[in-house]
Length: 271
Image (cartoon, rainbow, N blue to C red; front, side, top):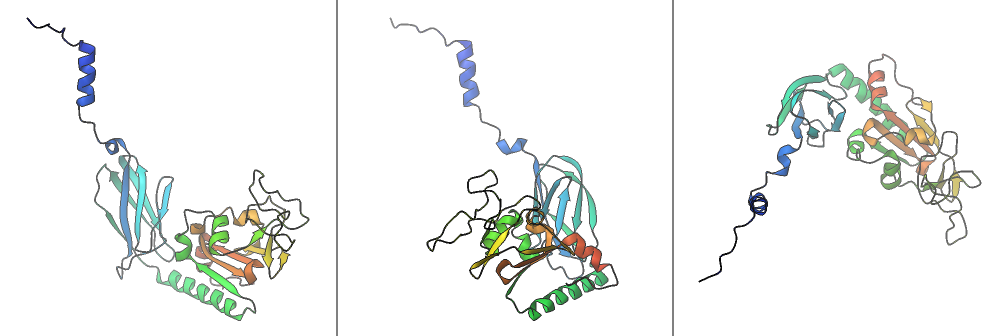
């Protein structure tokens, strides 16, 4: 006669059943993502670098006019779309776990577009007349770097070699700020830049230009600025960045300033 085994304890059996049950997809609990494309209503052309936002979540469209707003809670939401030279739009959406891509058309504002084109042409003409080498980065390219800081953009895309000025009291290598230091020495025994960093207001920032350290003349819109003001921006917030003479002068223009100037009858300052 075989040995009879006692039945499994109810708690153990329940635990095994729970482990054997299929798990619900994790994404079923995640907030929805809103995706779509922004185009010109007159031509159907995709609009790059348009600002698409729901609440505090904001993204820029890519070169094909596409966008994705992640982590939007299901329910009613207001979506806004803004682009230079176009009339903005605000849409009321019902956000759900599964949504069809949105197709959003913006109506062009011919007068504003013309004014912005004139401004861009004047900036270009100024660069062409400059006796120095000038690198210009326009809005479409800046938008592709929107996930980085302006500090990283200037360092990795604009190719600035920069750091604290020699004999200045800027932070040293390994400090909390993580900035470069004039104490760094190259093989020739001279100071060598290590990073482009945000320096405290009033402190100096030097660029290495043709073998010497110079403090850049920094302009934001129509006023002089400190380095920490410039590096406080994201590339996607800027309409144009110009780097003169490998960093001797840096000019940056914000999108809101360009929009404001486009509605004025006078030409923008091009000092």
